Amino acid sequence: MLKRSLLMLITFILIIVSCTGCKKHVGTSEDNAIIEEEEDEEAPVYTFGFSCITMENPYFITLEQSLRDTLEAEGHTLITNDPDLDVNQQIDQIDAMIADGIDAIFLCPVDWNKITPALENLRDAGVKIINIDSEVKEFDYVDAYIGSDNVEAGRICAKDLIEMCPDGGKIALLESPTQNSVNERITGFEEAIAGKGFEIAARYDTKGDLKLAREAMNEILDEHTDLVAVMCGNDQIALGALVSANTHSVSDMLIYGVDGSPDLKKELKKENTLIRGTCAQSPINLGKNAAELAINILQGNDYEKISYEEVFFITAENVEMYGIDGWQ
Image (tube, rainbow, N blue to C red; front, top):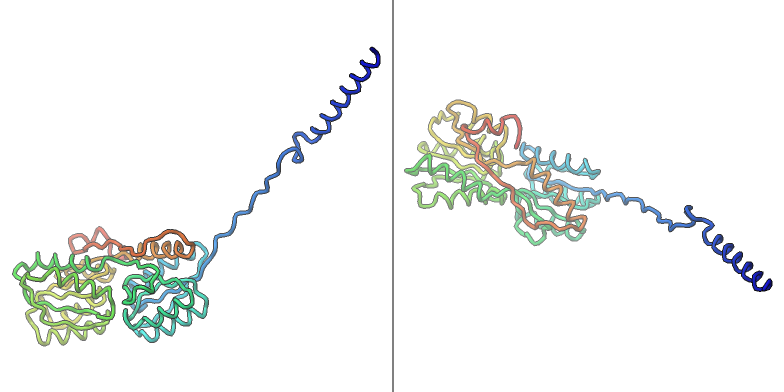
């Protein structure tokens, strides 16, 4: 009996010791699984290029600043070059950007066809191409396009002209065939006025430039004194046409622009101005959205291949809504 009790006691003691050994570290890190928190990986930063038609145009200055503000706020870098209406210079500058190691480029071509060699070089270097504001002709090279609905901008101007001149009349077109954004505006305008009694008395290539537009308008007004309207591919062209019309003492003609620039909106505030209106874009919104689009492309996120920004018509009647001191 004593032997049996002793055996039970020894067994009981062994069980207690065993349990104590197992629970030696209860409540300590040794008792619980240790999960090391992974440090958050820093978001990658990129280098972008910006190349537009000309930095003499306030629209592109505002667009570039919007891009820069958005990108630099996230730690990215933006390299900007001004080709100054010269496509060969634009190609050379893009090659220099490639050598600088850009990851992506925001490109608005001086010449939508002749820019193709730069597109080839960008593709070979693995640089993402965000075609902005005005399309390139060889669109297959492009990763994405973002810009205003330029065809609709032309239609909006045409619709107003038809209401203002229901009997039709002679008109002039100041365009820029090398810039597809302007081509689309003029196309939209021409399609909308077809069969409405209007005659295109003259059309000139102004390359989107104020000075060239003024010179072209001088020639037009020397030959045609009975124009009812002038459709201009952008606001800079419209301002050039206005200077010429004022010099020729024209008092009854409608001038249409596209952009919604502060300079043109200021003209709309003047009494008896020949500027009828501008179909406005928002370079500020375009810049923000283009920057977000480019980052999504580089990070491998989903994105839209083609995106169009809304346009709207500004006249003397509603210019106060949009303000005259800045862009939309």
